[in-house]
Image (cartoon, rainbow, N blue to C red; front, side, top):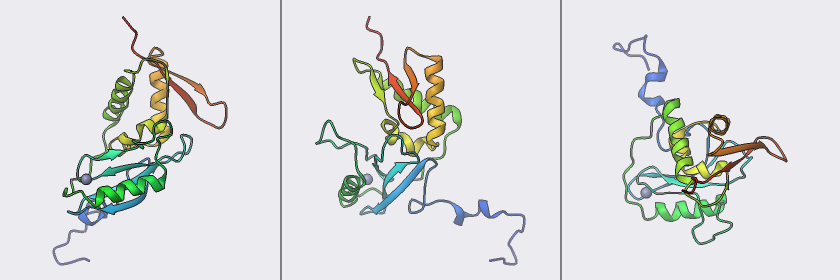
Length: 188
Ligand SMILES: [Zn+2]
């Protein structure tokens, strides 16, 4: 509402009211399905990503403490989270977490986002054998990455092009997109 002191040159995008809050925040590339409120005000998100090609898998992240999970710890083999299971975990966490809310993470620049992906690939190469790299493997990083699935896929293709010893890509046999295979560090 204009007052005697309001400056007309101010654009609404810089006003405080347009800043996202944990209750409204939807990072780029992410679909927030549910939000839970922790004991001291931290918000717990149940989210998935903007593409279905890696399946409808969910993750849970607390915006107050460091709790984040995309896996079903007691069910190896089929350990991806359905929305229902993710919501159960979020509800349990919100019922016990005493963290206050933290500032929301800023959207990183492209070079930083690229680093986050490459660091993930580096860590995932510690396995002994070739293994498929699924986009849902990056679920825990998506709140920090804040990039669309197609941006991430383009970045993975660039890695496969530059470093075929690290990652290879081939078009999916069914549907669209690519299948990525991650190769372990060479054994010396
Ligand atoms: Zn928490």
